[in-house]
Image 1 (spheres, rainbow, N blue to C red):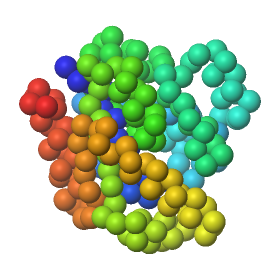
Image 2: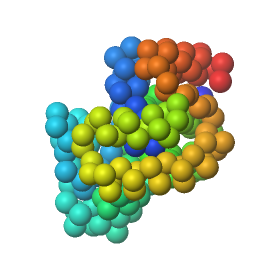
Image 3: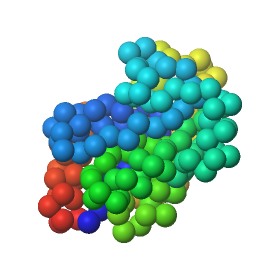
Length: 188
């Protein structure tokens, strides 16, 4: 059974919002809290949204082989605990991972029989630019860096088991819940 669900998307595509919506509906699905060296955003809580740690601590964890995947994204490290992944597989617990594209593909590559991967896309690059601007968290330069990365990440979409275009948040939520319901029934 595929009990590892990865959700990836370019920054600003709505993956965090969709993951939170799924978690409200499917309380039986666990949540993997990733590690990061970036500063918390408004309303983010340590241990809930991410484990916020120093660059030095993250690098020590890399040296100790504690991550099943890790990546440097926009100058900050992000990583998934091996222990979290291994325990979910061993206990056959369904767990949701919100990851960057390369992290999701690494988890899938190393756990192909257990992993179902979902890629979230905005309706267009213009819509993504508008979302990033409206989010108000990035400078113009950072937005351009994120948009450039979007073009790179778009090339990986065919490596995912399912793709959701988040043009309408309500529809995207329903589509995500439907995919996960089908997955839990063994239909996918």
